[in-house]
Image (cartoon, rainbow, N blue to C red; front, side, top):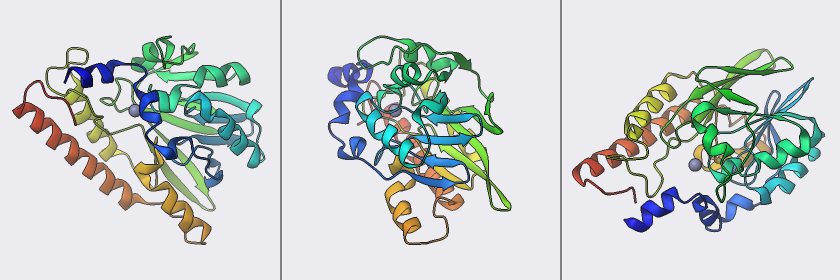
Length: 278
Ligand SMILES: [Zn+2]
């Protein structure tokens, strides 16, 4: 219990976990998801590139050690890393944001982060990026560049400023709603009942699931490839299937399953005060 609590609050926890997931740092082919939205992440740590006539937006930086793979993916698509104008994150955990300061420095991009995650983003504690945030975002605000518009939805619990991004993309004659889930997950060590550092954590998860259920979704994406079946869908796409990332039913099923899992764990902790998530 002590060790778990320590792990949770240890800023280096994500780095430690990193060594346990071989997909986190594994190269993955860069590809067009739909319209002007591209995948430039690793085999599990999702990084999205939105290409516009005024430069590119990146969502997530991954760990510092993953940046060479991200650069390679961007260039393989025929884009330029130096054209990165805005960097956004899913939430302030190292697997999504450790390299934000590095990318900001190398490209002069503006870093924009949900207000409640700004302290964690600017922190220089071990494993934190210590990045200067150029713009603090508030729930529902938009980020616009070259005709593309992203909406920042506060979906807290996993972190206080966890953000789900939505945008509309053109696909031929159609307009599709894209949802990039920040994280609906209760990590090992998370305390949902009587959490001194985050008293309203459980209520925040409840809010998050209500928000996720309210979002119109055609294209289902998230901070980790595992959320939406990146590998299997990419293989289907390569085989010539109709775009498998257009998956409204998969989105609904995923959100419902995660909501159910959260509620069961919350119930379990209510019955076992002082316990943390396994
Ligand atoms: Zn996380």
